[in-house]
Image (cartoon, rainbow, N blue to C red; front, side, top):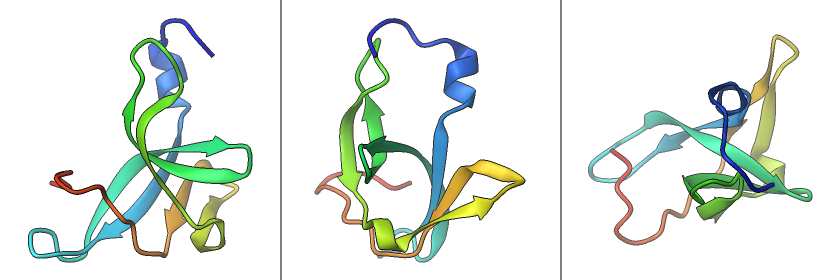
Length: 91
């Protein structure tokens, strides 16, 4: 979907919570935007300017993704390892 993004649309984006492990961030819980390309979930690192399409993302294993529940239908948790691209800071 092309066009400018409204602040209200941004609030309604899906979110994914995942634990970051490594030398700089042992077990830190971070929240990222979540995008579905068909049935394929993607953790969004950056959005294409002026669109609602991810510019940089990490593919997630759908079996490791769980929706929090009816009270928070926009947030998921991810129980798998996230393979961040080299050089991406998780801080």
